Image 1 (cartoon, chains in turn yellow, brown):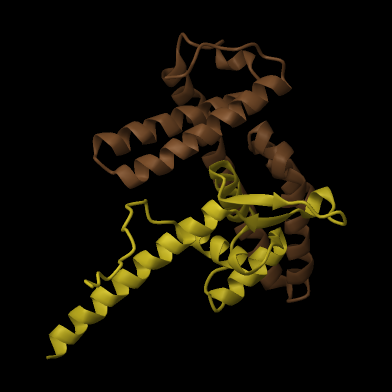
Image 2 (cartoon, one colour; image 1 turned 90 degrees about the horizontal axis):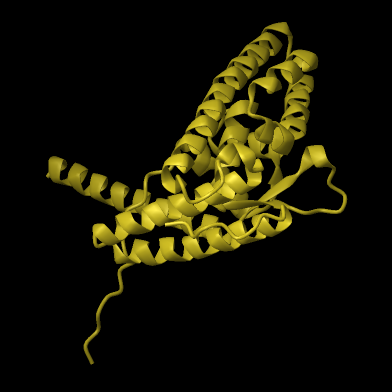
Length: 117
Length: 146
C-alpha cells in the first residue's frame, strides 16, 4: 500500500498583527475579560507588550466583527466586565497563523544551518 | 482622570461607544488603580500612553466607520435604501455580506478554491445575520445583494 504523507493545506491569509495574535493566543486557553487579557498578554510576551485600552478594544472590535471571538455570557458578569472567548473560526485562524510561523522558522533555521556548513 | 477618559470616548463612533465604552472605562480605571500604586512617574506614563492610544484608535475607528459606509454604498448602490436611513446594525450586516461576496469572487478568480469554500460559508452566515437584523428592525425584503 502506498503511503502518502499528509501535509496541511497552506492557505494564504493575511498575517495577523501582533496584538491580534496575542489576544487569540490568550483566549485559546480560557475566556477572559478585558483587564485579564491585558495582564495575560503582558505575561505571555514576557513584559515586552502592554496593550493600551484603545489598542485592546480596537482589536476586540475587529475580532468580534470577523466572528473570531464572541462575548461570553456569564450570569455574574456585569455589563462593564464582559468576558470573551474564541469561536471555532478564531481557533482555526490562530492555528493557521501558528502553522505559518512554524513553517517560517523551519525555513529560517535551515538557512542558518546552510550558512554554518 | 477617569472623567477625561470618559470624555475622550466620545471621539469614537456611537456604535463602538455603546458596545464597548463601559468596558473600556472599567479597564482604564482598573489599570489606573494599579499604576497609581507604582509611583507618580509610572502613573503619568500610564495615563499618557492610555490617552494617546485612545485618541489614535478613536481616529482609526472613525476612519473605519466612514469607509465602511462608503464601501457599502458602492457595493449596494441602487439596490437598497440609502444607508443613512438604516440602523447601524443593519448597515454592518449588509457590509459583511458585501465583503464576503467580494472575498469569494476574489478567491474564485485566483483559483483559491479552499478559500472560496471558506468565504462561501462566511457569505451564508452573513446573509443569515442580515436576515435576522432585517427582521429585528422590521425592514422589508430588499433587492438581493450582488
